[in-house]
Image (cartoon, rainbow, N blue to C red; front, top):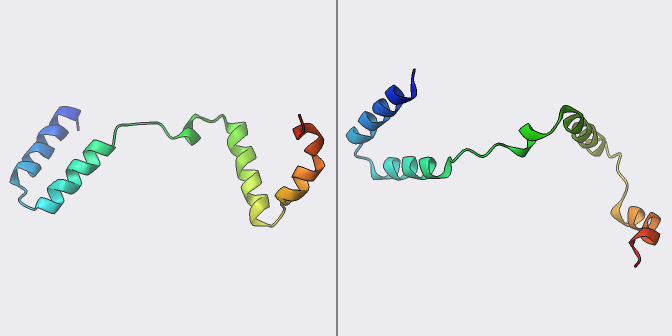
Length: 79
């Protein structure tokens, strides 16, 4: 289906609608749906795999407490 025919169909459906809540919901949806690509889709595959690996490790409890990391690297944080 082409864009123009979809728009025409939507116009017809909206013109026949008499439910205020439905029309307000449609308006909200259309106003909020300006396309912005999801950052995830912009990441290279190696970064996605690295993030997924980290999430799996965290789910297994394979993490290092923040305090331990800060202690280990505090020499680089001092000015």
